[in-house]
Length: 154
Image 1: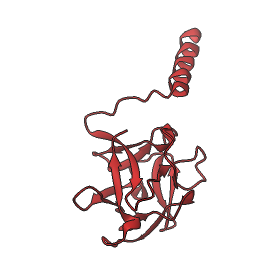
Image 2 (image 1 turned 90 degrees about the horizontal axis):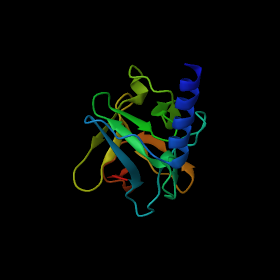
Image 3 (image 1 turned 60 degrees about the vertical axis):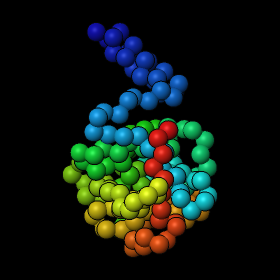
């Protein structure tokens, strides 16, 4: 039994290292969330849960892939397994996923190619702040290009 556990851990490590990602279930979809302001920067989660979600250049990492769970309205980072969480009303950080945490509830607003990503607890929108800068939550403004996001399938 001990060997089976070691083999399972080794297999999971290999899958993670090789960049394979588990398929999203029918009630989930995977996105690379790209700024629609022309920068082409995407949401990126650092492996540390004390670090904000950043806008960075796309380099194809699992740290830049997010699973949206339609049943729980959460955004889970594939690379870290953490969920995007509204913190202190204006920050977005990766935290352990908790379906009961209202700071982890997100919805999409708008039509057309781009959408606003709205935190339902604070009713604020994710806003792009520049290359390698932390995303911020601000009052929603549908006319603000910094609050518009493309939800691209990887």
